Amino acid sequence: GDSVTQMEGPVTLSEEAFLTINCTYTATGYPSLFWYVQYPGEGLQLLLKATKADDKGSNKGFEATYRKETTSFHLEKGSVQVSDSAVYFCALSARIEDTGRRALTFGSGTRLQVQP
Amino acid sequence: EAGVAQSPRYKIIEKRQSVAFWCNPISGHATLYWYQQILGQGPKLLIQFQNNGVVDDSQLPKDRFSAERLKGVDSTLKIQPAKLEDSAVYLCASSLALTGYGYTFGSGTRLTVV
Image 1 (spheres, rainbow over the protein chains, first blue to last red):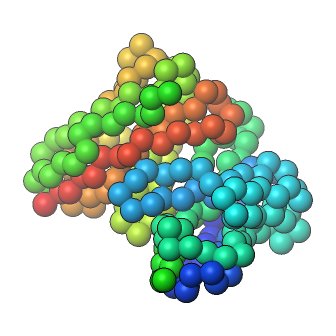
Image 2: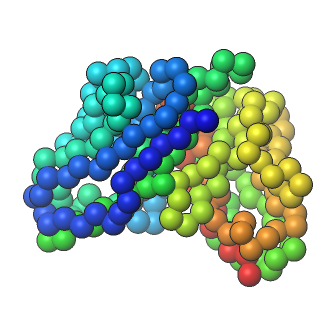
């Protein structure tokens, strides 16, 4: 079945450091890929998405590129801030032929802690 | 635009008791999802509705979990009887259609079973 694997956390960085959170996936067909963020005490929010190979999703300084050849969607940011401290989830949405549905499959999440 | 509303925000029950969660999706969103998020894990889909019909309930433990979406708007998720391993955050989400895009998540209900 479909699955998403993320690097384990926590990831602890100093402010203005470069961030990479690795994400790889297994899915049939051509899934859409997403990064969601969960700030402390808040609900899940969509951070960025990519719907086909070589697409780059970007938002708030974060970027991720859909790499079909390596089945990866790594999240990057050039300079993190304390306010970026949160849990980040990689997810995919794959088409199911019999029902045509697309439901999200999530990775286990990576906690990012940014220190001043 | 109002978000996805869920209640209660927190619930503590003893094992073998029953509990119900309520979700009101964004107006006009035909697709509604219930997810279970156990501490330290990603959300796992329990059930998906399209209007008032079930699209996917393959991961719903049907011996104890049930869900309904009467009139294709609000939805209720019930657990009866609860087990310790049901302790989790139950998230409701909605989207415009069966596209998988445009998800909006509610803040969730945190259930603790003691």
